[in-house]
Length: 210
Ligand SMILES: [Zn+2]
Image (cartoon, rainbow, N blue to C red):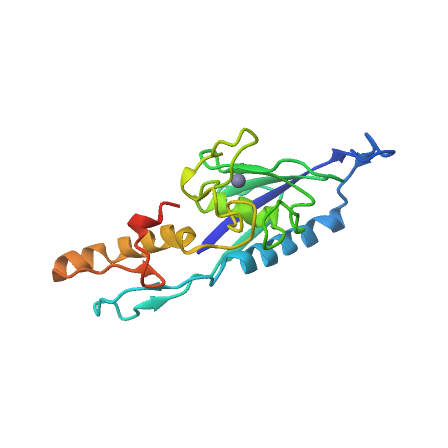
């Protein structure tokens, strides 16, 4: 899966005690290493976590993995990007988000470092959680009032990447299974057979509800 990302960098202000309002300015040599680390860590977090497999004999290949090709540019002009990400330099916690409809997002300079969010299995890479939204997957955690932030179906799965942990679940690959099934839809119809790839050969995209 190819994802084209255009990065912009915004300067920030210090928030730590004794350092409040100190200008936090990106230097040019800091930008490419941030992007490189984003690519490396987000790719490692998401790719080849599950397989897409079908019992049909129609496709030549019946068991496939998912790999990511993150194509990035820094600033400049790119009319073909999928996502425009602005990264603000910070020295403490900030809320990050992506807006799927607009194809833009807001990250901060700490989002490529693991952060404790409360999951028993350990910290989460905030950039990897936000990348999950770029893949079309909804939040699974509860808000501060104890209500589902978005998807109410997995609020107990604290270790999930879309909750407070870092585990990519089979349901998070549901969109990939849906995509590959669309590629075979015509061939399946013409041959009168059913070609359904399922995540790990067991979870139907229809049941994944990511
Ligand atoms: Zn989220």
